[in-house]
Image (cartoon, rainbow, N blue to C red):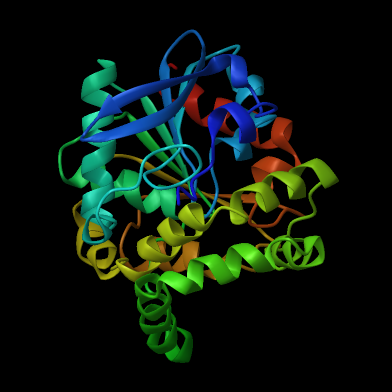
Length: 293
């Protein structure tokens, strides 16, 4: 049985649907949203999210940029690749294939959470060459201590178990569980924002892709690669983020990228761009202006 989201049914009321199209690249059928005009800004969401997370944020930036925002492989309405290609280099390669198919060269890139790591890896691997990289609450370094020793093995176990994704999707019928999940990020979303996450997590295919991505994730590559990154890096950090500690940005700058600039967002959590889209968009515009964009 096909347990993926269906565009004609599940995507009927998708945010910014009028900007959506489907593109074949890298052996996958991608859901991509494109809007606006001006310098090209590529935006990648994080694990477990989709283009819905830019629903109010993207229109704020479309007045100044040509925005390109895909659902990442296996997420939302984009096809899933093979399990072992959901790695950091694998995902970076898929993004590179998509850019080639679209015939665009991003001037600026922004990644939320794991999306930031993918963009940095894509730059290190030569798939993209933006003027700057914006990491929004970026998950860039391996978890330390007990969580690091438990998280990856657990994700591998769940990703390989066909019943696990169906169980998590079944649990997502309980909206209270989704609300607790969102609240655990340190962000406060409106009811519609929570509804979209519930729609995603009720799809076993989306859950399976999220688990596969987490199971294949090796942020040790970031520790090796960050010192080689020559592209200006901006670490935009929600000070109330309880998913990726704000301390991690300081660790990135201290140990790996001393030239990186940290931009604090007081009062905002991991989903900062969904909480106050205009405020975070203003931050992006200020960064872009430093490069004449």
